[in-house]
Image (tube, rainbow, N blue to C red; front, side, top):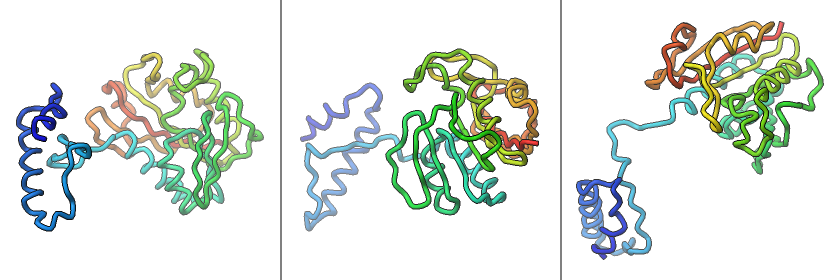
Length: 244
């Protein structure tokens, strides 16, 4: 078994020290399990060698930006919220306290109380103009038109999608928008990265209520100084717009 174990763990990505620690833990578990309630079998080994860290790691973009948005929506307390293609973790949690509709180019097969899931094309939304009181589109626009998710190639896909978000938002309504920010560039076919000024220009005519930012180092800053964006390589910009 130990020969097989070493073969299983024998990747260049796993150090000898971590392999030995795994073996020691397994031996200790088997020694303490005197009633043999949990026999350790070779075919069931599932080594996790990288999780014994001093702090809990997390994706700083995808933890901070939904938390930022949820707080704003709770504050605004809309009758309904519509989300377009953000992380499913967001709409699934939000629907516990606000009726939520989630739409995606690739619709999600998700069934939860308070949540409706459907299909939508961000470049041609089916909502009436000026009809949506509360809407979000987070960490999504940067992908539109790059083909990554099966959508048509369109260099102007992001602008068309933003124009649609602006069109459907009602006067006085809230639009929560999140995208990678920093040194402007395209990393085809993953995503685009925008400067602060590019986003403000794309949302011209809307009023910025709040700009918050996840820095390259993972730190989240509420009401961030927009000048910080130029210092980032791949930050996460969180924009709360209102339509006048």
